[in-house]
Image (cartoon, one colour):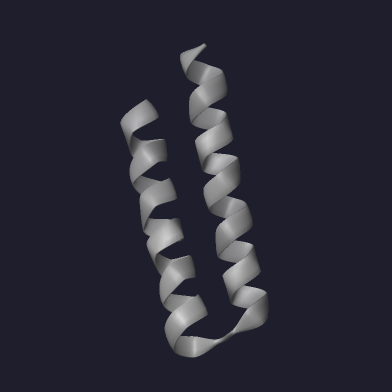
Length: 48
């Protein structure tokens, strides 16, 4: 389960970076960033 969360987080961060540099869709960028951070936090909490 932990590796799935990290994969999701990486995909979301990549999507966020693409949005920042390519699309400039502000709402989508921030939503992706928040989801990526939440996924990473859940992974860290479950590991500990």
